[in-house]
Length: 133
Image (cartoon, rainbow, N blue to C red; front, side, top):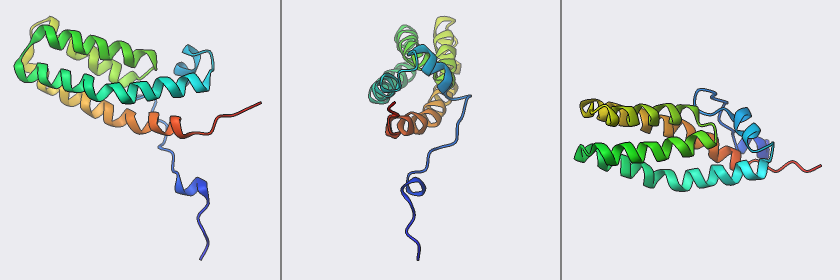
């Protein structure tokens, strides 16, 4: 039986430009792969706490807390060109600002789905070997 090679063992998720615009993220960091990997790691480390804040704000119907938490996550996501999370966070921020809290649970579900799409892409980015010249 043939031994699978390392590339086959570590499958990279397919590109998903609706979730993450990697080319834009690289442009923002002036092509610095290591910096992009660092930012991806920070986002992955901080997003669970931000998502918990958003979830709790929705559960309490706390408009102001939801607006602040969604705004913060939107900013973090936009720094790494996380298109889907940015869009979903902006939607939740608007829901809170316009006092449409009846729509917040659906907005939260959308945000959670976008984070689930994004996380494996960022994780794969962090695992890629750094190209040296």
